Length: 434
Image (tube, rainbow, N blue to C red):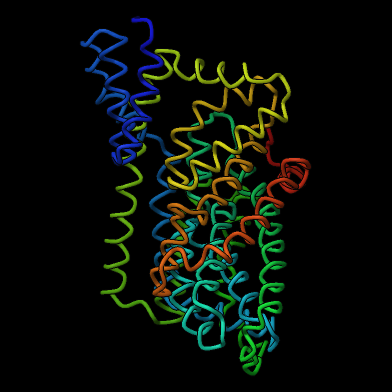
């Protein structure tokens, strides 16, 4: 093994990312560079095998199935019914539409498992109504982008599925349950600056539309509200494995959209299948190419090198944890959640084990930190989606986003300081927490 090959692999990845190389290509090329420098060139024959092994895992079937579930629910009119039900719950009050946006993002996150998908669905429906009610478009875009970031915590989070694949021994059921309370906590804390800003700035004065009938709104939205219950209920009862739960969720979304709401035509289903296949293919290609990087990094000892460098900075667990969270926050500002997990988990799990951090709790901390980055400039994938739908430049949301950033950091700090916030529910449900 050539000295310095481990460092060369990490530097190659960073350089490729900085110059704008697509994340999957950057990971794959960095792995190949590491093999060429540190190992026998004949070892390039392992590239195909490691790419295949990275995706030839039964639990990964859940990813395309949950992506399809979210797409079908989005196009079956579930979001519009959830908005009506949320308005019935909140009622006519100043700042009501802001609370509706947070609530709908939270519920819809339990169907899509993806922050950008959640943001797009809610922004398309709510931003025109919020603007008509007197909310600035920049505020609306920022609020929905921040609220949709909770989708990475609420099951069925695609990023959490990837985490369990990368960290053997972590129970996906426990991780899903562990994300619920932090997700609810983040949404509740986001509501504080949302209401305060609404009343302080004096907008939303026209947000006094009559309250829709509560019972009828609930009955209309009930099939959609049942989706998270089916997912967690099936997992808790042991009736379904996580992958089987994903298949059941697809069947249920077809039942709701096709038979109950009668809003899914064959053409709509075909387009949902095509779009979901495209999204799933991108995810799987990234995971496959990350398999090359993971194998090369493990073989060359690059991950141990990175962990050792981080551990050398301090022996105090809270200092190291703070550095880790800052690193994840910065990464979340420029990369999507799945890519961050693929890059950071092999580097950070040795650190977590060195300090004996619970891997279930650590996975939720990673998800919360990445969630903050999803609506924090410069890239802010959620904010890019909502700003485009609102028809405003990204910078129009910055003055509002800073308040939501502070709120999410407070929620993150609470979960970091009190691990029981994340772990009491999986323990209550008797899931295996490590």
